Length: 471
Image (tube, rainbow, N blue to C red; front, top):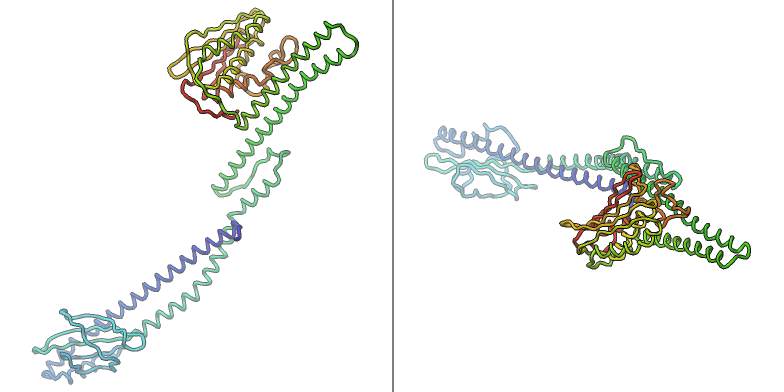
């Protein structure tokens, strides 16, 4: 089967117009046939009526002599391609021409009737009869005409249609091909432009000029797809660059500490200090790799929530206890308001990680002497987790981007006090948003520079689906 769209459209166009021409020809032929037969029947009826009227007059003049009256009628009637037959009862009185086959008049209560005579001549005939009574004697005048003339006219029509229709179909095929070729020209132009688009010039857009509305819509959709791909490529490039940067920092620290430790003999205390630094950077590196793996799994849609009923207040209290040593080490006051049972359904491990990420983020970016608080409250259809700090805050222009991967507000927030990368590595808040979205919830940020930030997570208290949504 030929799969060319141009060929298929041309074939459908030709089939449609061929069927249209054929239907038109059949309707024209049928209409003309009925018109010719109607005209013939009307003429025969008129002849029979005229001959019957003359026959009455002649019978009066001839004192009832039917034979003489019929001959006078034939002499007065104009010559036509028809035969006039005069009958008295069942006896044929006279005929103006040869009667090719005997016929019987159908019994009828009316004075006039018309009927077909298929056995008359080569193609049959039509007859029209006019009945009347004179002096109690029944007479009938019949006008009969063969269908030869009608058949010849119809044959001429068939020849004309046979001569005209094939060229019209050929012209329809040519017109269909040209119209299809012209209509698909923008598609060919789009295909040629598409072949020239690669990752190096993905910002190129399709141009098809004043094409049809449908093709313009197709081009616009493809350009929108290219825009999304361009954004995806930019995001991937930034992600690779940021990931490489974040991986390089702990690796550089580990290598530097190892090189310093191995450059000369050290005391046990010095070796221990180096191992502590290496251990801390290795832990952060493992955390980064784990975050990257989780986000990759989330993007692939291969993370499935382990749903269970749990008390959100207990989970937040446990998270606060886990980060208390880190808060005390940084000289911060940590408050936790999680009184009262608040039951939700969700993945306990993911929700725990979400709360820990928020607390870790708040502790790392709050100066010594500040305060971090976590609270849980229940609403009618949702539960809210709120983590607030009195840290350095986030500028309004950056608030919309903090949940993007590896996004850093500024250099002050991108490094902890000792200059190493913080635990979130620019992925912590992205993971928070993913976990909230996967539980059909949402996370919101309220912040003012220099006055701290407040992250609010809203979770539905119903039963979310068991499949995590891609980030």
